[in-house]
Amino acid sequence: MKTSRIPGFYTQTISQRLDSLAQACGLSQEELSTFQHLAGLSLDQANYMVENAIGTFSLPLGLGLNFIINGREVVVPMAIEEPSVVAGASFMAKLARSTGGFVANTTPPEMIGQMQLLDINNLAAARTALLEHKDELLQEAGQIDPVLNKLGGGARNLEIRSIESSPIGPFLVIHLIYDVRDAMGANAVNTACERLAPRIEALTGGRVHLRILSNLADRRLARASCTIPPTELAFDAYSGEQVRDGIIEAWAFAVSDPYRATTHNKGIMNGVDAVVIATGNDWRAIEAGAHAYAAHSGRYTSLSTWGKDDDGNLAGSLEMPMAVGIVGGATRVNPAAITALKLMQVTSAAQLAEIIVSVGLAQNLAALRALATEGIQRGHMTLHARQVAIAAGASGAAIEKISAQLVAEKSVRIDRAEEILKGMLSNHD
Ligand code: MEV
Image 1 (cartoon, rainbow, N blue to C red):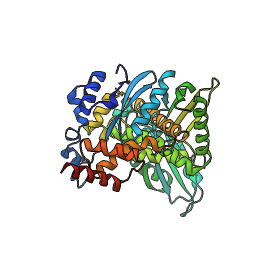
Image 2 (cartoon, helix red, strand yellow):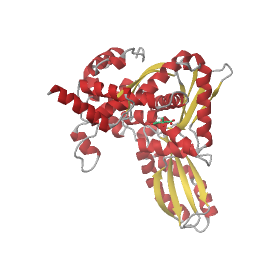
Image 3 (cartoon, protein in one colour):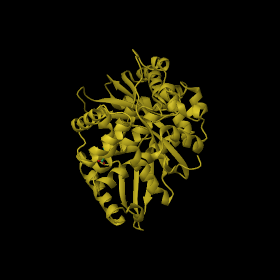
Image 4 (cartoon, helix red, strand yellow):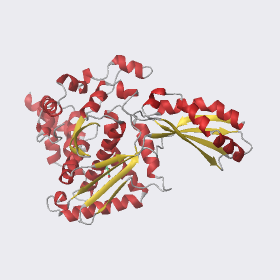
């Protein structure tokens, strides 16, 4: 990818956009056609993926433009139904370009498998027995996936936690820490936990009840940061300093109030989920991990941080669990997900995680910038008006005409759209 800046992309038709994209990224038209409905996930493939399949379900796929992440130009496929998200991320990525874009990194891809150990009389003795046999247990867990071991992954550690009080009394929880490399990891970790259970029961005399991955992937974190000079933030009558300080004030609201933090983090997830979905990953896992991580201090708060650096620039960062894979599961079945990874030239799960968290940060900035200045509705209005026009039955050129009128009248309502459409049709007759 020479550049992720494709000026005027927004104004092109879909087929012109595919041409521009093919030129910019070097993928063939045929490969890019997997993003089109009929060439994407086939019914046969869907039938293998879930039970009782009767079809597939589509979402719009937009391109997040202008991203530079760790010095690399990236265009980011985003699957999302909500207007303004793709435009917001692309616009903020453009502002971040002046300082080199986003810097991102990840911790090792270590997932946690949980085993619930019940029916033990002496928690301390059970703990000691497990720790004495830790090496043997890790070796056993490591045998489930020789390919993963070859790639440098595998079982890393066993940690024992005591749950002192619960509705059924105290019990032990054993955490198996497992490096899953480029996989999301649920299969490897669940298999390893199931494999260890009988030996753990033999060693402790207890009963291993649940054996399952934890979605609070707090050892597998992705972080992104960016710096935006005030000159990039200024627009209309707003000075750059005003916008910067307004964003910091908005962030302080999210830090201090869970009601606001939930919405603030939802805005981050608008960007995160869109890329997670476009790459065939498990967005429920990412959502669950994100919100649990947002509460890891004991109080639910903002996942991102915004402040002012020594030079007066707006400085933002985002840290969150990011259990995504590029091998296995839907990432390798859905042709559109395969093309999405190719388009971003992603070669590791860590690289994908770095892109996702950068998009999340850009998305958060887009929302805060709008909220701290003119409000969210103006940007939303035009695209929303188009959806309302379509829902009212408009097609072709009528969509633009009706949506423009709805926006001009500041009344983006379906009954009004139906009325305008009716008027247009009767004028035709
Ligand atoms: C809407 O999908 C997302 C926002 O509510 C996020 C926010 O309030 O920060 C605009």
